[in-house]
Image (cartoon, rainbow, N blue to C red; front, side):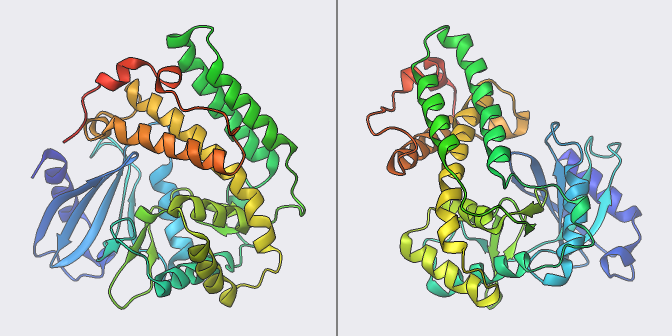
Length: 350
């Protein structure tokens, strides 16, 4: 057990066991189970009952643990997320804030080799269930997840500015790649929404690694720190891109979704949002390679990264943007014009 594990064990012994639905604390076992870009996760087994301790590792989001705690409390009644038990606001124990929530048995959809038709429809239904939640009493307390054209373009613009600043260090005034970004950004500016965006309760980051499938149960969603109000077509565009769905898979998802929530305009609106999401994700992928290459993420995360995998993902998004016509067909992926050569020499994780 590492030092964090020892601290967590001592911390749990001091908490009232009734928080976890227990009469007394008899035994505690701690095991480190995963590290993400912004969370360090431990499995805590108290009297044989399993919990996840999620430590915030993102200094840019100091309120992330609190936001996830509040989000999970809001959606608890839907049965599509883990139950949350405790939020620790002080950093005196682990150096960061953390939450304690239900540990979900099962596999993430990222680990599944194939998504069957039933799983795709179930996923559509739970997303529609989330989108059908009444937010009248809480919407003023929730952040809008860039659903308007202006909001999305502002986020893309911020990412492009970051990329330009980093590239200037290595490439000076050579701006071939910046021309690709600027040209594509201009294409998005010309796109128009047929209907003004409207808002529902959204997760904000529904991706294969954030959906847990347990035997005999409907899928459940994890990582709720980005929850807010979002246009449903935008959230579905994010899902389609994250899962890299085929046309058939998209249709199965929508069949499940529309069984729960009627929206006759949905199929027409998703493709527009998808173009914005693809390019936004492409810019994020380029930016993320620079963040890792420049050592801007937390040290524990950096040690476990294979930079080549992140570069390959950026290349994949480049290809998808070309297929959608967002990036010109004659644009070429040239590593030497996009990233500094030294990135090829950065050691990768095992």
